[in-house]
Each structure stands twice: as C-alpha cells, then as structure tokens.
Amino acid sequence: MNGIGLLVLLALAALVLIGVPLVISRLGGPSVLRIVRVGGLAYAALSVLVAVVAVVPLIGGAATVSVPLQAGGIARPRNVTFDQGPLARITGGSIDRATLTLTDLGIPTRLLLIAAALVLAAVSIVIAIALSRIAASTLKGAPFTPGIARVITIAAVAIAVGGTVAAVLQQWGEWSAAQDAFTVTAWSATRITDPGTTLADLGWPSAGAFTLQIPFLPLLLGLGLGAVAAVFRAGERLQHDTAGLV
Amino acid sequence: MAPAGPAEDAGRIHCRLDELLAARGMTLTRLSHLVGISIVNLSVLKNDRARAIRFSTLTAICDALDCEVGDLLAVAP
Image (cartoon, rainbow over all chains, first blue to last red; front, side):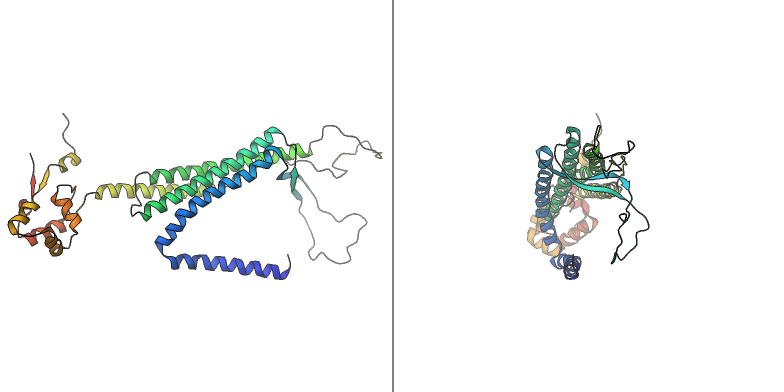
C-alpha cells in the first residue's frame, strides 16, 4: 500500500471511530434501538451468507485455508548480496504459517472446517437475534419481558461454548489441512546424489505440530453476557413485583 | 388445605372508589386531576384489578375524597 492509500485508510478509520459514536449520541435511545433491532436481524442473515460462502468451497472446490507449518528460518539466499534494502535487519524469527488454496482435501478436514464455520455462524446468529429481541422489547416499553433473560443466557452460553468450540475446530481443521497438503509418504527425485537428502532439504515444507490456543475473549464475553442476563432476571422480578401497582 | 398465598389474598381486597365518587358526585376524571394519578391507574383501582397501592396514592385519594383508608378499602370474606 502506498502512502496516499495509507492516509486515506487512516482518514476513513478516524471518520468511523469519531463519526459512529457521534451519530449514535445524536440519534438518541429509540433510534439506536431501532437500528439494533433491524441491524441484529440483518447481521443474522449476513452470518448465514458468510457461512454459506465459507462452506461451499469446502464441500467441493478450492478452499483457502491458513495452515500451520513447521517453523523454518528466514535467511538471505546463499551467494546473494543485497545492494539496496531492506531497511530492517532480521535477527530472528521464522515462517510458521502459510495461506494455501487447496483442492481434494480429506473428508475429516472438510468436516472439521465446515463444523467450525457453522458453529461460528450459529453463535453470530444467536447473539444477533438476542440483541434484536432486547431492542424490540425495549422499544415496546417492556425491556424486562419474560423470556428476554433466557435469550441472553442462551447467547452467553453460545458465545462462551460456541466461540471456544469454533476456535478449537478451526485450529484442528487447519492442522489437518496442513497434514493433507504436506504429508508425503513416498517420493523420488532425479539428480540427487546424497541418499540422506530429505524433502525439507529440497524446500518442501512440513506440517506444523498441533498446538491448541484457547481464545479467552469468547469466555470473557460469555461471562459478561451472563452478568447482563442476571441483571435482566432481576429486572423481570422487579417488574413482576410492581405489576398492578397503583 | 394450604393457606392462600399473598397473590390470592390480593384478590379479596375490594376498592370502594366507585361508591365514594358517587356519594360525592365526583367523576374519575376530576379525581385524576385532583390527585395527579392517571385515569387508567384509577380505573385499575376502581375495578379491583390493582395488586398493590402506594402509600402516596392512598394518601392523595383519601385527602381528595376526605375519607379514611378503611372507607376506601375493604377485605372481602
């Protein structure tokens, strides 16, 4: 990206960061709630579309997957002298991921990646519907309608469990895709004299080891939503206590 | 037989607002103006659909109708 492109991007980001809160504060509560009510449903529909776009190539086509690699070093090619650049000097590090477009993936890999996409979409849909229902009931003047707390609790569980499960499935699927892409059980080559030569020596990467990283953000968001659900349950009780009060 | 709970007991309270208004020749609208409570809420009270009454509501109605709380509410057997 050139300098002008970067400046335009920064200007747009600043506009969004300053403009969106400004517009929301000017609109006032009911307008924001109307946006959330419609936006929630639109987001749910968009999540379905995103899931379809993610799943279709995995069923029968070329799927683009980011896969883990066995970490390889970065070194200046032998017999090459850099006459100009780079600006920074590499003192360490490795290439440990690759984004590949793959066909003929194994069934287990496809199932894992499809499941990850579907679980993520389901979580997004549940959260979007919960937000839309909260906005709709608040607009009706009854924010503590029975059932809203249950919807928020379901969203909390969905984001905590679903978010974590989706991340695990995705990482597992990516590792499985790396296995599918790089595992060679027999090979031959011409013009190789050293019998100890490996594929790695010839530049063929190896799949990275399976390392599971549990994201804490879904758990944190789930706990936060759980707290919101508790507030709504308290609100429902208070509303029930004051029903018929003159 | 188990004793009736608070929710069932609330249904035994009868509000005599209708009779008190008739005795004084006062309309519900006029009372609403005097006590600052909506006609809807006064109707709820008058038709025995209220499940709870604020002390402030009782005080305002009793002041406006010049009556005691016991004149306004009665417990049905």
